[in-house]
Length: 223
Image 1 (cartoon, rainbow, N blue to C red):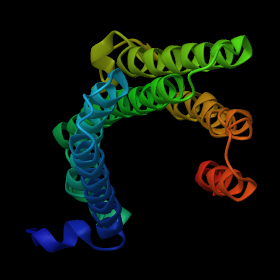
Image 2: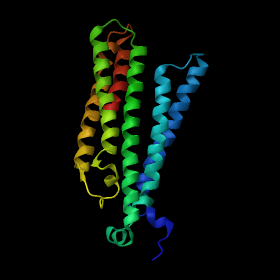
Image 3: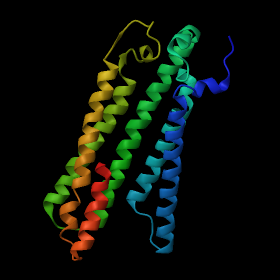
Image 4: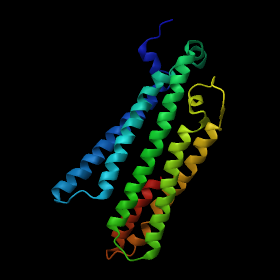
């Protein structure tokens, strides 16, 4: 039975494409705005700019997989039809794409957070030892989480080929639990990264209204 191309993005599959496309557009606008503002100010790019650019490349690749995945995994099909049509080779391909997605996810999140932490260090120039220790501690957790996600995604099964071919003899960890538990430190570090600059903001020599505005800007990310 031949299925039309549009059916791949039916039954909710198109939502993945919309979200990924919007994310790419927003990130392009933000990256362009950041670079343009640096040019207007005649300021050279810093370490956080280069790390952010690298994170953007991984994010674009991540979004590309997300856009293609409804077709690869037949998200738009009803499950019964998908089950009947999907062959063993297609199932292996889906598993391989999912592993690639997890690797790109781990890299993009870790690099994005490292870029933010580098920005904190550059903007909040301070001799406050606690702030520096906090930035380094969060950076260490972010780095370990990113490496664990990437390595764990590749080595979920022994031998590695069992990741995409369950017919190979071996063993695997609980992949769902792995994805869930690697998300926990990402949420925790993200929360503390939002709170980290607030004490520094309230030490700035600006008006209370400006401090409140800056605080609201940082806390907006929690929502």
